[in-house]
Every structure is written in C-alpha cells, then in structure tokens.
Amino acid sequence: MKVLLVGGGTMGSVSPLIAVYEQIKKSKPKAKFLFLGTKDGPECRAVDSYDMDFRSIPAGKLRRYFSWQNLIDPFKLVAAFFKSLVIIFKFKPQVVMIAGSFVGVPVAWAAWCLRVPILIHQQDIIAGLANKLMANTARKITVSFEVSLKDFSPTKTILTGNPVREEFYSCDPDKGRVLFQLKDSLPVLLVVGGGTGAVAVNQVVAQALPELLKFCQVIHITGRGKKVDFNDEDYHQFEFLTNEMREALCAADLAVSRAGMSTLSELIILARATILIPIADSHQEYNARYFQSNNAVVSVSQNSLTKEMFVSLIKEVLFDRNRKSELEANISQMMKVDGAKRVAELLLQISK
Image (cartoon, rainbow, N blue to C red; front, side, top):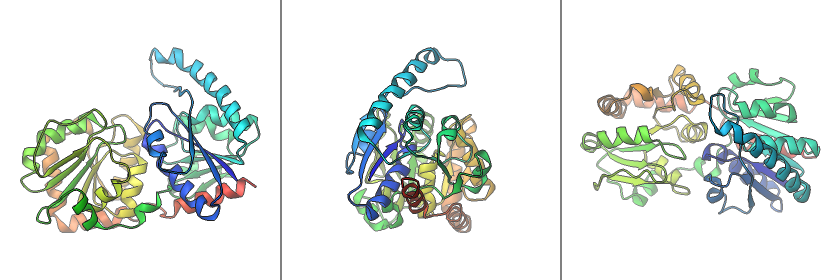
C-alpha cells in the first residue's frame, strides 16, 4: 500500500494529513507514505518525526489580485506539474490525498493524467480556489461541515468532519502546567497566531501584557522570527510548538486564535473557550462568522481590535463562568469528531 499525501505552506493543511496517516497506519502498518509539500513551509519539520519520506515541489499560487508574482507563478505550476508526474510515476501510489493547499493543484493534475485516484479534503467553511481547481480531478471530496456540501458535486462529496491528530483526543491539563512551569493560582491564556505567526495579534498582545499579567498567565506562540520583547515569569513565549501544542491547549483556560480550521478543530475536540481574530478579508472570516453564529466562539475583527478591547474580552470570558461554560459546550458540538477515521476509511476504499 502506497499513499501520497500533499499539502503545505502552512500547518493548516498538514495536520489533517498527519491525522489520516495515523489512522491508516493502524490498519495498514506496512503502508508506505510520501509527503509532497513546499520547500520553505513548516511541513518538512512537522512530518520529520513520522515514518514517511518528504519531497518538495515548486509552489505557485493563483492570486485574485494584482501581484508581480502572478507573472512568475504560472511557470512554477508548469514545473511542479512535470516534477509531480515524475514523482508519481516512480513512487506508484494507489491513492493521493490533498488537503486544499495550492501545492496540491499541479499534483492533482498529474495524478489525474496517470489515472491515480484522488481524494480532496475541504477544511474551511467556504471552498478555496485550489480545491475548486482540483474538484474535477477528484474521485471523492470530503468536507468538515454540512454547510460546505453545496460547494461540490453531490455525487462525490461526503461529510466527514476535519481529521485531527490522535494525540488531541486525550488531555491532561496538569501535564501542561508542569511542562510550561505554570502556577496553579492563575488562569492560563493561550494565544496562537497561526502556523506562520500574526504580527497584528502579537502587537496587541505585547501592548496588553502589563494588564493581562495582573490576572492571568500567558502562553504566546508568536511565529518564527516574531519574538516579542517582553520578559515576565508569567509570560511564556515560543516561536513555534510541535509536539507540545497539545499540552498548551490542554493547560489553557481560554484560547485566542486565528480562525484556521486546523487549530479550530483541535479546540473543538478539547472543548476550549475561544476568542477568534480571523485574518482580515480571508476565508477565516467565514469560519469565524459561522462559529460565532452558533454561539461557539467570540469573534472580533482584527481591524477594530485595540488593547483595551482585547483585555476586556479576556476578562469577560475568563471570569464569567456561565459564558465560558456555554462556549465550551457549544464549540464541542460544531463538528463530527471522528473525521480522521472517516477520511482514512474512504481513502482506503478508493485505492482498491
């Protein structure tokens, strides 16, 4: 059994692929995996601890706005297509899974040409351009939410939920408190700026820290090269977390996050009260709006966010016990929680 997994650029498309890998390995321990991703994304480091090879291909992007890179990226797509043809021909996978990343577009076209069955996974509420471009090549399309079923052909689209890595299904807050040297006397705020960090969120956090640390302790994941110049025994900052991410989420009494679906899915599994700051003018705003309409999160616009508003929101959710409990209960009901198992079973079916 050989499986080709494709995604990258951000951790958002990598996490569900790893979750499906874990599920297949349970039933097919001798299965071989190859992961195709970008050269500079976080995926190479993320898959390094798993039993799969990694190869990079050029990653072009079809932007719907003016950029000089639009003149170069079509050539990257062509180069990636031919490189994908060679990789697929040599590896000979029985099936290809792509998690909605632009790096997957030339791979999907190459796999379709070589008649290798393809499964495409749609994480977010609205279909991304990459998945729209790949939809006709797919044997099956899986979606995280029922509302997304309308975006693809009903004959090949299946509601599965979003695959989440197995480690997130068990949670020990005490382990996280020991790992991050947290105090039992103060609630824990976790701030996650996404796989590549968020400068705007980091700036607001930095401004708010003197007030926040009066009533809570903070774990802050800043993104690589985006360290905040602030030191305090109750402020714990990291540029990037891999295996420790579960402990950070488990230890948190409240999470502040972008609205990427990978992190949101982990918050669903762990039932954490959450404040979302979606990337402005992006698909994340649709994710945040959908969750807020179901009273599962508190969402705030990045453009209107101030230090005062940020501190006020943190206090409001942390210390209103009924509100916090309501958010925890509602977010846990937002999605099917066995997405990895469902997608893995479907992937094995179409590989036959």
